[in-house]
Image 1 (cartoon, rainbow, N blue to C red):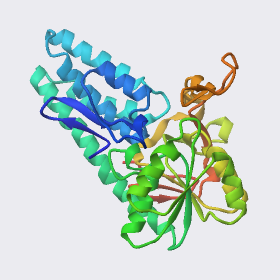
Image 2 (image 1 turned 90 degrees about the vertical axis):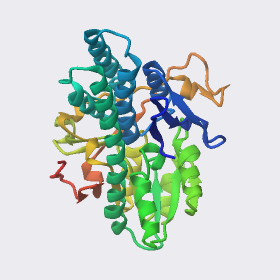
Image 3 (image 1 turned 120 degrees about the vertical axis):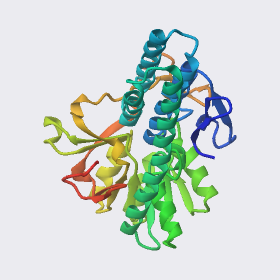
Image 4 (image 1 turned 180 degrees about the vertical axis):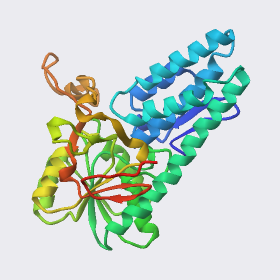
Length: 346
């Protein structure tokens, strides 16, 4: 099944609960907007493209959920719910962007039935487009790799971070379809271990030869010559980095991406960023982007057990910023781009 989808029989959202992996592959139903916001914040659904689809479906869910209100109250309720969904996580641009895309489609409609249908149809179209985009990303990106290469990936940018197929891992899957044999090294991706729990699960299901390593071992494996390329996804790509980045493009991705790019640069290993154009932000500079700060107990505790003193101060950013000068290729559904970026995002 897709990572996230719409149940036409019950008019609700269905998704894979990613917090249960790898021990349990569980599909859950989301029947309220509050339930969706909780699922987003708890990372039951995660990954920029998947969050975009979640936001779009969330507006449709609100359009069905608020049906008993008068029309004026109904429209206000849907708009309020949409804003709350868009603000559920701040860094990935897709969530807010796809919410607003659905809102634009329904804002001029004058009856509830039309709004519900249009919201659902638009959300479904956004989800379908994501799959098509990811497969084009894979087709463009796999031509950058050679048969026998070993690629390093960080966090999860596979099918479970999107509606289906994946961005960074989509390149690996497209390579396999073309009989380009790749090995993958996946980082554990502390503190929530998306690489260990999710990426390795995906890769094993697709029979891709995979090795799991601690985040801190990346430099060692590069030093030993065991990595030929780095492939990661992106939660937001800002074309204007502002003064802090000398105006160059900046990639926001899972925390730990930046030191991996620095190490890759030191060892002359190419860095490939794979992301749909919906992840490209042409309006803000890097300084405008809010880096999400996660719950300190994600670090203070491990598997429910105390991992550090209860009152220790914790810094737990979910993302970091990688300047484009450390990136060799950005791959979108439109093609491959070398920094400095002049990207066609239409």
